[in-house]
Image 1 (cartoon, rainbow, N blue to C red):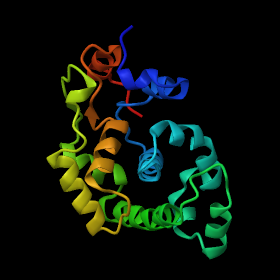
Image 2: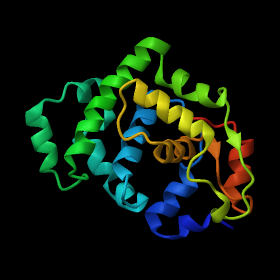
Image 3: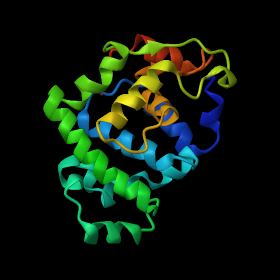
Length: 192
């Protein structure tokens, strides 16, 4: 079976590619998890984040936004000492700010899902890239999303991070056309 070339970089990336990447996600907790992980990835490889994903789930109360929104200085110091996550104070503080902003969005829109999916009119965009070099780093939609998230108080949500997020949660199907997952996702009715 043909796969996106990046998926062959490591076993964790291949598993993530085969099971998750590009599948439409509508569960608020999982949408929040990806938002935090994509922000943590800034300047690092995705495989680094995948390898620390379980550490993040443990350290960040399984991405419970209500708990994270209330983290205090003591908890942040604890997180900065945790070798199972990226120990970057700006990124850790951003996770707390993002949890607070996330809860505000849920209150304003009924769910984060309703808010975030409006950027693609509620349905995935299916691209038809022949190779990885054609896939953009950002798009006008990710630019718009980035500006709106920042306006709402989110951190580490630049347009490139937003586009990676859109790919991760299935708002856009960027599997290359020869990849077996491209057609699977395009015709899938399974949504998380």
